[in-house]
Image (cartoon, rainbow, N blue to C red; front, top):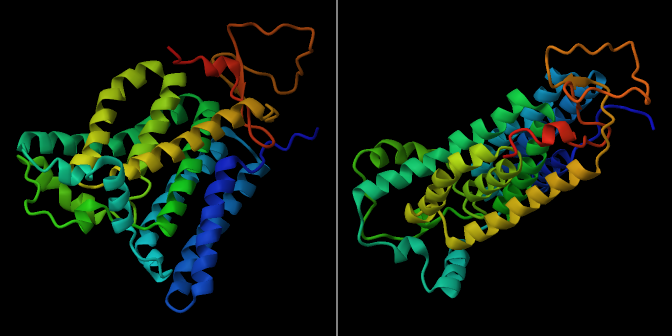
Amino acid sequence: MKKTGTGVLPHEWCFGAFLALTGLRLAVTGAAALPWSLVFFGCLLASAGVIVWARRNPTPLRWRVRLLFYPAAMGLSFFAMEHAVPLLGKSSVDDLLLAWDRALLGETPALAWLSPQRPWLVDLAMAGYLFFFCYLIAGPGAYCARDLALFCKCIVGLFVLYGLGFTGYTFLPAGGPHRFVQFEQPLAGVWLLGLTLGPVNNGSNSVDAFPSIHFAATLYLLLFDWQHGRRRFWMVLAPCLLLWFATLYLRFHYFVDLVGGVLVALAGWAVARWWAKTSSASGPVPVPVAASVPVAASVPVAASVPVAASAPIARLPGRAASRVPETTESIGGR
């Protein structure tokens, strides 16, 4: 089998499909929607360019650039949806999501939990809500710095999740209870809510309620850390539980948004696990786990010569993708 070093990874197909589908829908709509299609087509073209560039010389640096392209494309497409999705002619489905909540629970939590309001709890919930941004950056970032194979696996599942979630935004746009429901009493905190609620609301694209990616991404990262970084899992579990509570208590989401988040999180997790198990470790660039152990590129290792267990070598993702090596799979697992 020819070792090319890089095939198109599952998240590149999935997020690329979101970009292509959304761009095509905007282009077909035409008129004011046409310029916005260029944003999504531009991200898709840039993705292809990064893949080709990394394929030519798949060094660790180029692999990281390739994988880190998707957070950038995610941010750009997220904010573009604020203007692009309404141009698709899709009406808000807040009324539908509210009806689903009432059918399941009797009332949506944002209304069921109106009283009593405790300012200290409101601020605590906002602190939990803001933890999302810390975990989203620091969780994958730890793998990026420490273990490239695990970082690749993490990004594969995370951006399958984002591709599915963003597609949901374009077909079922909703702003959430804080935008749709009329509340007699606004939320009141001690100081943190007043300081941060404006920037949080301004950072929304107003169509990002269903599914809840705040819930989905943190659930996915918790599952990932349970397997690969057990110590961090226990460190972040309580803040994540607070975050999930905050999505409802602070009126950002309906309960069914979290149900949708479970589905896309499990889809991303399943794809990441499938990819790690079925992809072949055919990457041409060896990455020494122990930096002090040199690897002579010109001297092939014969099959009959055992490799010392103290100097395991992890390989970068291979042709279609890479299997996470057994040596790196166990790092941080307990």
